[in-house]
Amino acid sequence: MAIRFQQLNPGACRTYLLGKPGITEVALVDPVLDRLDAYLTFLRRENLKLVAVVDTHTHADHISAGPALRDLTGCDYIMHAAAPAGCASRRLLDGQALRLAGLEMRVMHTPGHTGDAVCLVLPDRVLTGDTLFLDDGGAGRDDLPGGDAGAHWHSLQRLLALPEGLVVYPAHEYRQRAPSSLAVQKGSNPHLRPRTREEFIHYIQELRLGPAGWMKEVLRANYACALEPGKVWIPVDAHACEARGTLGKGANEQVVVTIDPGELRPRLERDDRPVLLDVRERSELAGALGHLPGIVHIPIDELSRRLAELEAYRQREIVTVCRSGGRSHTAAQILQQAGFAHVHSLEGGMLAWRARGLPAGRQDSGDIWHKL
Image 1: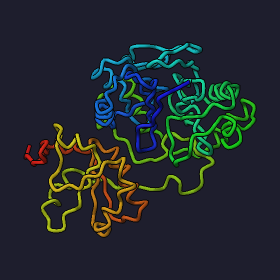
Image 2: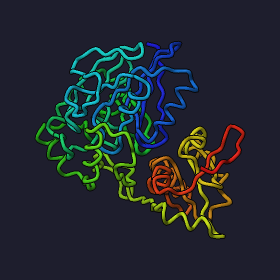
Image 3: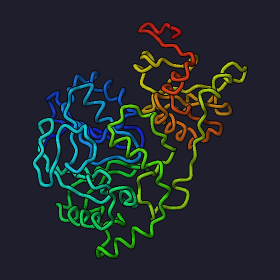
Image 4: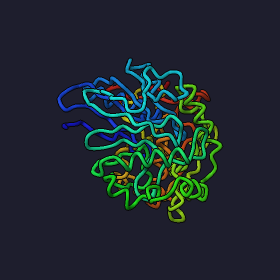
């Protein structure tokens, strides 16, 4: 089966674009609200029509872009029938044949991580959401509201019964693992080791999971179909949803320090002002939020391969900036991994900056800067 398939996000959250080659209609699976402008820019640039958004489950580590995309594009917003969000326009059932953007797939209800979790089974791949991650990533944690380790075991048995050649595409990938087949996952993923239901529940209970209080707030925001990413505090946690009992020590120890807009404002007047690295899309710089003066602009998707352009600032303080703080956290992590020692992320991004009434500007099509 010919398929147009593309992963759109630079960070750990995976958003998949699906469609048939040669047609303009596409669907998105698990879009992230912090990337809303980037999705809309991509769709316009590629002359694509978004007809559907599917969330494989109620997310706990980010706010879904599904409700906003439904409002802005008129697309269907699709979730399982058990999903608490009232804004879904279509509901899925187990075993249902689903047609999206010209593609046929089967819905598999796979509760465990959440009660509304689904996997989407295509002829050559399976989109597993948080029901199954890759290799030693295991799967989504089961200790959040609606989570059930016993139900998760049953869901994994159903996945194990699928054709072994199906390639697994999860909703998160925290360590750049490459998608691989169910056959490979059977040998590399600890969640798929042969266990009884009771043994699996004990295994889950023994995992070393981090605190989950903030994730419950994100769940509530998604239940309410939130439209603003900055409404919920989301810490820098590169492995937030992962049941990671098998990961090595230090895999989740990197910390990014944020800086409040009110603290940053006077520091911009100093002779040793921080370097401001804006990692949004170029089109966002001309948008309503504008941007800070004197920025260095490198979109987050390009940052890793353009680090040499920042070499002159290696000993300077760098503040990363985006719309609401998500991409800037990712950017700060990339810089820290590259050895930049003095890095902060602007807390709340340009949304928080503008909410304080602080000055910004924007560039017109001729790159002329206008004060807002």
